[in-house]
Image 1 (spheres, rainbow, N blue to C red):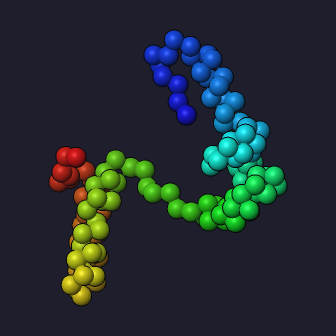
Image 2: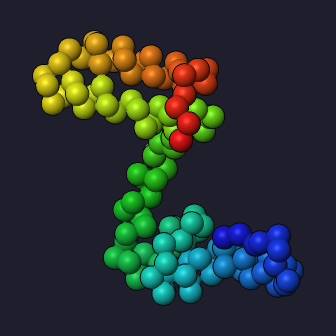
Image 3: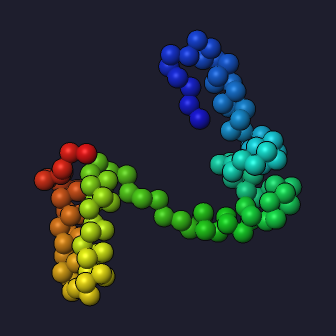
Length: 119
């Protein structure tokens, strides 16, 4: 949710946003109308889980132990290019060490911003 800086009704939009993302709305109206809530209280709410056949309760351990991709300038370069040597290795029964070395090279480029292709 976001409120545009150009909004003619910023305060109303901010109030609506606060209401929508509140725990109470996320675990009630939001879930009741098919939304996938972001507020943790909805994921642990008994009624929300009854409505979803324990979907939130069953998925919560995965969410708690999930991995968030790195957030640094250059990471998208790594993400966009590092799969190529891996795929080539797998498809051509290649040398895993060679593929890993190439992926490490791409990673080093991504963290130093050297030789990055413009998007």
